[in-house]
Length: 229
Length: 87
Image 1: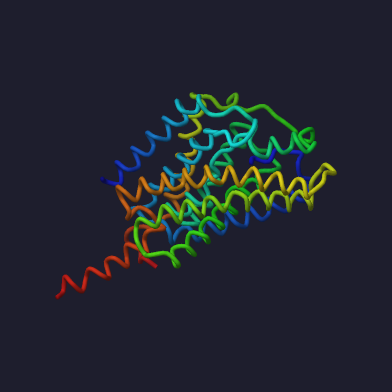
Image 2: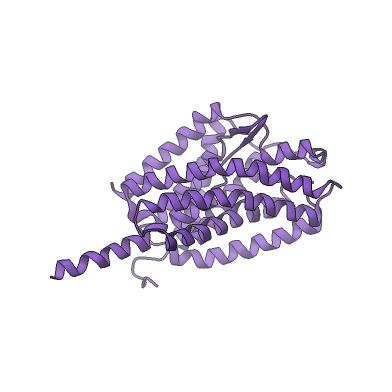
């Protein structure tokens, strides 16, 4: 979903650029609470992993492919604020080194594919965590569903931006149907990849998964009284 | 498994995906590109040349390492030191 230069007009790109700067700036401050000596090494890995998996376009419909966006994955593994930093680094490197995504569209891409998928993925994940049984096995499932939902929402936000500052005069209802439709399919891939990646880390070191902290803390609370008794 | 090994194995997987598996990735246009072609606004795209010549096995691995260094560096600086309180 990398937006190139030219799709959105200058004022809209400037506005998303400003939003991106505020989000990344806030993330630089707030990520501190999520990262300590033990979990900080995971952040570099998560960003590198998202970059690699974004190269793996999978076919979704006739002549169309999709790839991971990664916001939900990053949010669950290293925390939402750190997730914003990780995805932003990925889009920055793709933009500057690979000409993947426009220079003036860098803010748009950080907001759409980074901030939006992190926020939607994390909110859906937390909601499911509250509703579903508090077990470790639920963490990858909730992460996968959050990831699935995050992709069509990001696509819908692109349509909203296009309605404000799109450079071509096209039927917005058709654009919305096409964008949300194809990105719902891509969302399935996003959900599966996120489920597998979170599940793999949960299997070996659940304590390294930010989104599993509450479940693990709860488990300790349940075990400790028995130890005392 | 120690944290160091989790990170190293994860990195190995990332390098393998970028350097080998990426060869098998679909070359069809992605969702937004396809929609822009179908709905008549693909011509508004302004393209430019990639500094490293686009995605390939070698440049992919280079990209993984650059992202690792940048994201790792930023989060290393931002993190809480061990001596500081948790909240």
